[in-house]
Image (cartoon, rainbow, N blue to C red):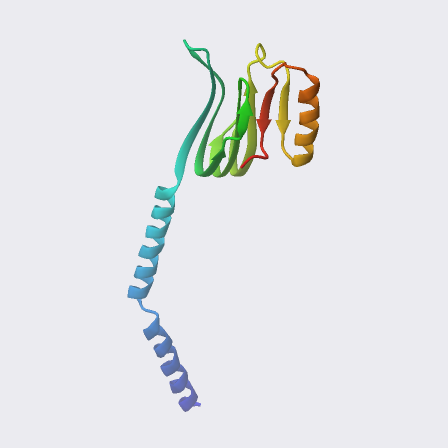
Length: 148
């Protein structure tokens, strides 16, 4: 019985030798550095959707994103602005959000865009082409998300 107890104490001391306070301190320091770098590498983006008439800019939509943000501006025709925004983080866009946020913003001047066409797929592009050809010379405002 005394022999077994001495062996158990010796085995425990070997495990304690591998796990020292120096190792724990290095792990904590590395964790703090990793957290700091993660916070420092995130971006802050403010997106303003404005209409300019040559004299002043009227803000239609404003959003703030803190984190990883992907902003894509689709092709557009006419007096229309569009943005495809995807964010992982926190921010404010018509209200606060935390986590994943995906949105499509489309703003148009109603005095110049009587018809607004938003195309998101090839089938919708075919239908939009038929509608545009039937308008006979009138210029609708078009946002095309199918173009890369």
